[in-house]
Image 1 (spheres, rainbow, N blue to C red):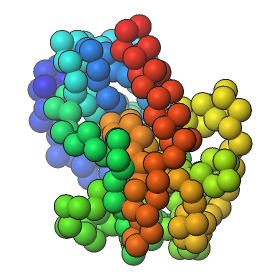
Image 2: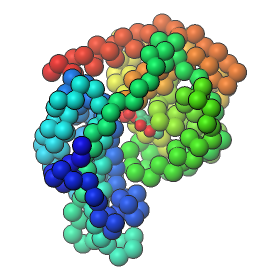
Image 3: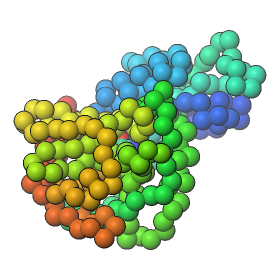
Image 4: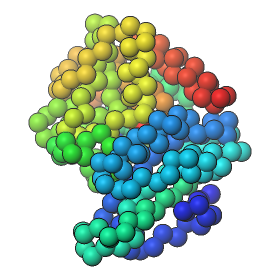
Length: 275
Ligand SMILES: Cc1ncc(COP(=O)(O)O)c(C=O)c1O
C-alpha cells in the first residue's frame, strides 16, 4: 500500500531529487495493532532532518493523519515514510520553489525468529568505515551507501548484524541499528556527533536509563571497549532490542540490564499500541 503526496499511487517522477541525489529523509516505523508506534518521535526527527537539509517541512498534522490512515487495519507491519526535496532544479542547485515529495508505504513485518530477542544474535565487525561528517550526523537522510556496502560484506545467514567504525577507529553503530553495551553496571553507547543515526529506540533506551537510575556513558569507544563488555545489544524501531550473544569470537551472556530494557520497552510499546 502506498500514499504518494496523499494519493494511492507509487510512481515517483524520475527527476525527483530523492532519486537523483538521495536528497531527502526517511523514517521506518513499526506498526502494531493498527497504530504507528512512537509516531511523534519519528515525525520530530524527520522535521529536524528537514531543518538540517533546508527542506521545507511538510505539514505535520497531514503526515500524522496519513500515517494513521495507512496503518489502520494492519495488525503488525512496517510503515516507511520518505520526504524528498521534490522535483527539479538545475544540477545540484535547488529549484526556487521547493515542493517536497512525501511517500508512505506499508510493508509486512520481517519475520525474525523469537530467538533473536530471547537468546541473542551473532554480530561481526565491518571493514567499511563511516565518514566523519558532523553536519549530517544524527539525521536519517537517504544517502545510505555506507550501510549498503557494509551489509554487502557478509552473506552468512548465521550473522545478523555488522558493527561499523568511523575513520578514527571509533565504534559507531550497526549497519541498521544503534549499539549499547554494559560494563560494571553502566550502560554505554557511542556518541553520534561525527556520524551515525540518532535512533528513536536509542533515545528511548537513554530515557529509560535516566528514569530508572542506570548509569549512562555516551562517549567515543573503540573495538576493545565493546569486546570487554559484560552485555551488548543493538536496537532499532523494527527489531526492538536484540542482545548480542556473540561478536566475532567473543561470547556474551544476555544480562540483567538488557533484560530490564527489553521489558521496559515491551511495556512502552504496549502503551503506544493501545493509546
Ligand atoms: C544505520 C542505522 N542506525 C540506527 C538505526 C536505528 O534507528 P531507529 O531506532 O530510529 O529505528 C537505523 C534504523 O534503521 C539505521 O539504519
